[in-house]
Image (tube, rainbow, N blue to C red; front, side, top):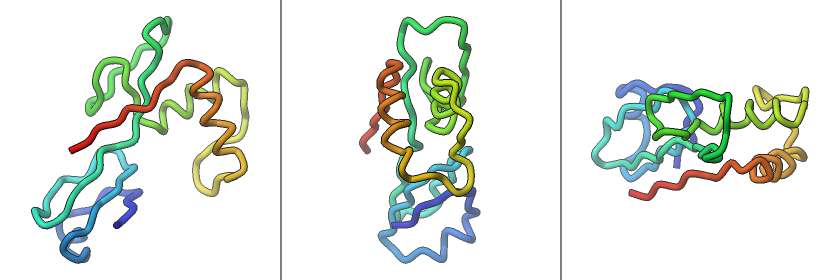
Length: 113
């Protein structure tokens, strides 16, 4: 498994051995160049249906769906938090942020091949 946090060119993807699964959290998603590898979907959250005053349009998401990184920004705003999840993160806050997302009605989007 390769955890991909930046865009990879087809040439860079060749470095992975056959059978590799690319688990990606990069926007835009990497091009699925390798037929002998698998590619995970981007992590995403679904906004509550009753949300008002927040417009979203993300080209790889269905209506009301946002990439996980953007959902994190929404949760931080709603909670009034000043910490962030860019670069080095405080792993002790991961569960706190997850619980806050669920509290505000965001739901994880799962997609299976």
